[in-house]
Length: 529
Image 1 (cartoon, rainbow, N blue to C red):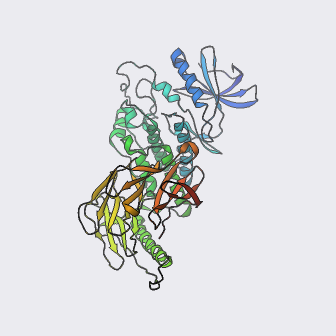
Image 2: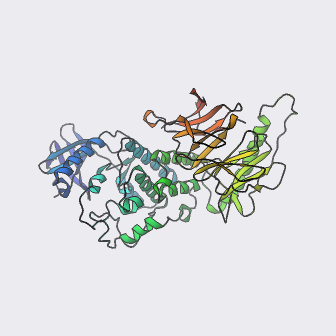
Image 3: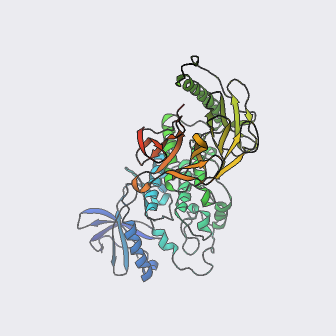
C-alpha cells in the first residue's frame, strides 16, 4: 500500500513516491533528526509477511551497509514500523541509465567512464562476498559525480522466495517492456546469464555477464538480446550472440567489442573472471580513445598495415639505440614495411603481444589471422620480403622468443606451447591458470614467466613443461589489483612487470626470491632491447 506524503516511518517523513518495482516502493523522505533528504525503499508486503525473509532482509542490509564506495548508493539505516520493513538510502539526483538510454547510445568516452565506475563498484561488492544478481541500466543512476549502482544484494531475497513447482519457467507471455516477473524467471531476463536462467548456482561472474549486457546497451542503444516472448528471449541468451558493435556503431573500438563478447560468454569459465578484469580492460581502451579515435570498420585492415609499419620503424630505432659491444661495427637505421600474408590480416589486441622482435634483431614473429581460419604464427626475416607460417601454431594469440632465437613460445586460448623455427610439432608446456594467456618472457635456464589476462599472478614454468608456480601475486585486499606483462632483462634472471593499483600503474623490478621494487609510474608495457 502506497505511503502518503507527510506520513512517517520512524524519524523519516515521507515526501513523495519516486518509483515502484518488484522489490517494493521507493520514496523521497526527510530525516528529521539530521535534516537531510534520503530515499526509503519499502520491502513489499509479500516478502515482509515472512519472518524468515525479514531476518534475511536485515542480514543483507547489514552486509550492504558495509559497502562504502563512491559509485555505490549508500545504505544509511534499516528499520521496521509495524509490518513495514524499509531501507534508508542515499538520495540521488539525476536519471537512471535506463532513462538515459531511451535517448540513444552514450558517447564512447562517457560509456567507458561509466563502465569503469560500475565495474569498480561491482568489484568492491564482490570482495565482501556480495553479488548483485540484478544489475541492469534501471539499477544504475547517472549523477553529476558519475555512476551510482543501486540495490546490491536485494535480488538474493527474491531469488530465495518459495515458488510453486514448475512456476519458474511458466507463464511465458509476450512482453515488450523489460521482462521482470516474480514466479517465472526471477530478475530482469535481458541481463541474466545462462546459468542463472537454467537455475544453476551463480557467483560474481553472473554480474560480469550483466555488466557486459549493460555495456553493450550503453555503446549501441540496443539490448544485447531480444525476443518477441520471454521464451524467445531466453533462447536468444542461451544460443545466440549479439550483433557486433560495429553493425550499429562503426567508430567503436574493436577491443571494446572483444571485451563485451568475453563478458557475454555462455560458459562462465570463459568470461572475464572478475569485475576488476573488466575495469582494467575498459581503462586501457579509454587510454587509447583519449589519444586517437577508433577507425571505421573498413579502415581497420589498412590501419593494421600502418601500425605494423610503424612498429617496424620503432623496432629499427630501438636497434639503433641499443647498447652494442665495442667490437661491433656502428649500427645503421633500418626502415621497412611489413605487409600481412595473403588473405590474412594482423592480429591486434591490447591484452596480448601479437608481434615480437628476435633477440638478434633480424627476424619478426607476428600473429596473422586468416579470413578462413584462426590466427597462427608467422616469421619474417627483415632481409626478406615474404613471411612464412609456422606449422602447428593454429589458434595462437600471443607470442615471445626464446633467448637464442631458435624457438617461439605462444599462447592459444587455454595453453602455453613452444615450437622450433626449424620445424617439428609444437611442444605443450602447460595449461594457462585463469585462462587466456596475456604475455610471456623466456629467461635463462629455460624458465618462462607468463601472466594471464586475469592478472592474478605472474607464473613461472620450465620450457620443458610442468606445473606453473606463482612468483608474484596480486593482492586486491591491499590495493594491488593485477600484475601483468613480465619481461626478463638481458641477464635472464631479473624481470620487469606492471603492477596495477586503483589509481596508478607502476613498473616493478623483481628477481625470484627477492622483494620487488618500484622503478617508475608507467601505464604501458616495457621491454628491454
